[in-house]
Structure formats: structure tokens, C-alpha cells
Image (spheres, rainbow, N blue to C red):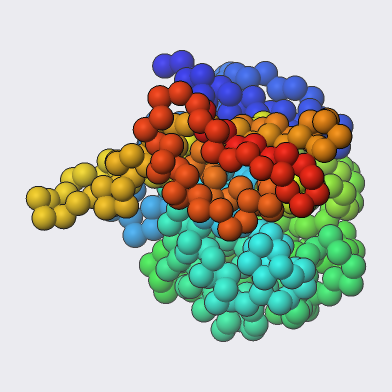
Length: 453
């Protein structure tokens, strides 16, 4: 079955990231890119995936969740991904919405980023401020928002080996498919920042053993990703030793953060060759070289995380939008989805359809109760034009937005504050053609006109 145009478009958007000069990447043949994974060409030397192992959509994963008798279907799904040929990309999300967008883009799985969650939830740097409870709470919101498996950032387990066991069990209950555990001391911090310190070899290994024990005690199959930050804290040799020890202790995936060269990355992938390796492509300038997925696959990696893409572009987009609003403008149409697109992404349409199943003669649907099916309902299909002409006769602003956004128009034109917006919309709802809603001069002498089209 040929992929739909929407899937192709989402793949193309994903591929465009690697054409950025920062990535030092190239354009990949579309046939080799599938749901966030680079699939190696099948030949006599390439292991073929098991039947039904490759998830081509979230619906297939939902079907597995519905039919499987496993206690932890997300972990099973993640393990199936690990068995597939090729390297598999996982963007890092930080809340339910960003995770939902990752799934809609066609990726097979995603990570949570402690760096991004600390930024989005607390507005604070990733220097140990965020707690176990906050990470579990945020993680549960994320796993409930999507049907793809999610690998959770478990930091350093939030304490000693006993705390690690509690952390693993909490992440299992929160619905995570996998958990990343590192060997930093407390308070921990982003592995690409200064001053990294790690615990002793013995304590680092005991953390992984405690995680394995917690998994067994829970009857779970959660994937344990063992991370070491000893490359920057101590040496490459120490990080390679710890990786071997983590594999012997029962880790499912190995991860050395902040490797400093392609040669170091190759040396890492030669350690415990039967255990999958994870790469961290820190966008924007970390210590590890940014390689494209095909290069990472050639080195020997299985999973690749992109920790800053979503939080980074979100920060920049919000900054640009606030600059526009402060300057008396709204963000240009191409910089944000339409209101209808936002509603579709968030599931409004599905909600309304399902709501109809429970409607009774004595209970009106929400859309009826708030009058959205009355005269006011047509407003959302109408366009609002805001025009500002300076007292010198030159045009300052001429934009069109969905009319339903009129209540927020004071963000664009503060002079409209105090206007009875609802009354204007009610009066204009039945108009066949366009209508001039407002026409006045503000205190600066500019002429402000608002039309409903």
C-alpha cells in the first residue's frame, strides 16, 4: 500500500532537518525513511524484520495494545523496534502536546527530555531542580497522550539504589516503555554542560542492578537504557569500562553521553556488540558531532535522540510571536496553524463526534448549550479584517484573522480594549455580506477599522 500524501509530507518535513548546515547531513532516499527510522536495504546479508514487527502507524500499535495480554505493551513495542534493522530516530518531547505532534509526524517512539521538561514546567535550567514526582507526573501526561512507546528520562534515579528501584517502578506505573538511568552524582545536570561528576564504578553498576531487580519485581519488561557521563567527568576509557559493566548487569541499551569525536563513537559501538547503542544528537552545539542517521547506522547505533529540537524551535517561535504582538502585529499566517488545524490536532472534532453518542432528550450537547449552533456559530467561518491607517495617511496594518479570535484582538490593537466584542459579533452574525464593525481614531490619531467579512 502506498503511503498517503500526508505521510509523505511529514517524512519530507522530518528529512528537511538533516539538510540544515548544522547537521552536516545529506538528503536521504525517501524509500529508506519510514516512521522515524532509516531502514537498511534488504538483501541476503540483512536480517529481515519479524512478521508484524514494523509499526507503520499508531493505529497498529493501538491494535497491539488492545489485543495483547502483556502487562506492559509499550515496552514490548519498544523491544520490537530494537529488533528491526536500521537506526531509529526519537525526538524528545516535554509535554502531552509535543508528544502528540511527534506521533502525528510518524515517528515510532519518542523520548522525554529532563532538560526540556525542566525548562517547560519550571522555567529553570537542568541542574537538578526538577524532582522525581514532577518527572513522573509529567511523564504520565505524556504517555497518556500518545499510543507510541515513550522512553523516559530517569536522570540519576533521584538517590541511591533504593531510590532507583522506586523510580523504575514509578516510571512503569506511569506507562513508560523505557527508562534512561545515568551515573551522575546529585544534583545532576545536562551532560554537555560544565562540571560533570559521577559516582564510583561500584555505585554506578549497583544502580543498574537495582533497576533490573525493580523490573523483575514489577513483572514488567521496561527497557533499561544505561547512561554514563564519565566521558567528560573522567575519561573515554572509563566510560567504555562502565558501558561493559552496565551490559553485564542487565542493561538493554547502552548510552555514553557527550562523546567528543566520530572515532570515540565508533569505539563505543564496538563495546558489547550485541547490546543496542543510543546516540544523542544535541542540536545547536554540544560536544558530540552531529551525524545524519545513515552515518550513525554505519557506525553501529540503533537509537538516536534529538533532545532540543522541539523545545528549541518552540522557544524561538514564541519569542518571534511576542515580538510581533508587542509591535502591534499578529504572527503571520504561515508561522502558525489555523484555528481549525489547532482544533484537529487537539482532538476537538473527535470529541464532538463521540459526545453525540451520549446525547439525550434532556441533555443538550455542549455546542448547543453555549450557543455555538446558534447565530454565533457562523462567526468561526467568517474572516475578521483589521486595518490601521496612520494620521499621515500611510497604512500601518492590514491583516485578516478568523473572526472567532476577535476577543483577543486587544493583543493586536490595545485601543479596542473595553469594546463589547460579543455584542458586535451577535449583531453581525446574520449579515450576508461584509460589515464594518468599528471605525474610529485612537488617541494617537490613527484610524482603526474592523470589518467582518
